[in-house]
Length: 515
Image: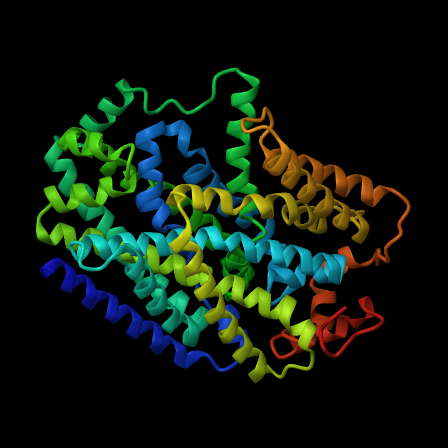
């Protein structure tokens, strides 16, 4: 194991130490989950950007681009970046005003306990793919840097356990502070190696011209119904399926002000889109610099093309910058996606079952769930054969067909009811599963797209039919103005006690924050 390996290990240890130091700011469950709502604008931008700039951005997207061109990456970065921009423009402000701890709290307040439970479970399951992708990438990186001395499986366990350490103690504070530092490293590292590679190939224009002549920039599908539907389904899966996610919600809720929540998401999403093309440029440059290596790996292990290019062609300082940026990208994404499902599972599934948890016990439970989830997702990653890109792309199908429509309708449609939300979830989920299990291998309509349409129909029909489930017609306006949330949510009282004056919107307040 050479100089590069020990440089990277030193950086790894340093960043873990910074994360642990950030843990000294965690005094209660709110600090752990949403950093006490204290994050400034620049940190929110950084944590939005760094959370999404993960393994799939550096390794997965370029590998897919080399095989399928621009058409193949419609889901990410195009859909993924649009998700963050849409969150900022249409969801951040109303969600911020509700002043809740988790995205599951929104579903409980708006549609009741049943919807809260089902959407939370769907959200937690969706994280398996995303976190699994980061852990898979960690295994790959440790294997490459150690020149095969550390196996990919051992690298997965080493990587997940070290990220777990500071996430376990530091929660959102650790994630946010390390994200800020890691964004700096990602940007500098990517631009540095981009400059090195650009010099090797004769400039950016040479690479762009070559890619254009090879038809790599063909984006839109041909005017064929099947292709159009597949293209649309891939786009909306990431663009819409990622919106009702706890990690997105955490960044909104962690912001110091509503304005920061809005523009932090928009700016972070825009930066993500721009910088996602740097690894694509690097990977395509490999087709000019090492065509034999690309031909060798393109159909066997395309995720290795970019690391191999850097190791074979770049000087040591550029290698250090690249792998430092890569590890920063993976770590920032992994820590956030370990924390998010753990927090929402504890708050929205475990806590109602156990009942009577003090803040101290709630904090302990969040940490215990984080540990358990890390073990489960590492086992999933070790045993998964899917590519990094596919892991991420497939992760959001379940939230697209279950959680997206209830969130949109819950915020923007006053007539949306508990029955409508329940029917949206049921029809979306059953349609999606039925087509996955019993449908043709190559269907005309992708399963997740059919599930989304079924979910929309379920919400409309269920809300307009005679109601068999209890529904509070005043809840929509109360939530939009933050009144109901403030009156009923136990996480709010100490933040904005004045909001308690609005209890008139909730004639039956409960001390435990549950409906």
